[in-house]
Length: 165
Image (tube, rainbow, N blue to C red; front, side):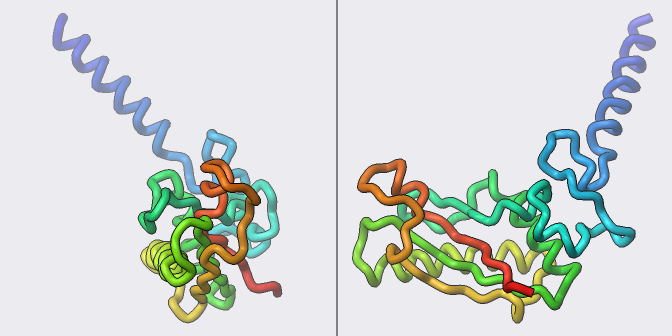
């Protein structure tokens, strides 16, 4: 009898695991990816302008004095990288930013490191190097005005700016 319960448990877990992982990209049940895929399994070209698409999110935020990509931005960058791989004529500018703390030179270098870190993840997901431009603004173009952690956190970012078509 114990073996029957063991096998029933294994079967139930297998079914649950299969149901949880069989969603195709774009069919997630978490409300994030609602843009349907094209026949080749890529987001359609128009997904870049769809506010329901995962590509609508184009900001990657960083911790103070860091250029490491946070885990919560990996899926976002994967979606952008796969989109760029599917449409090799699309170009994107990666604009690196920092908060106001640190010297101008240091912030320019840190912002460039951040943009290059984003570039590397996009390349890993198939984007072409020739279609990725890295630009560093340092502290010069803040998103949030203020001299507190809330403002600084918004300013430590890389923006993905797609070339107008």
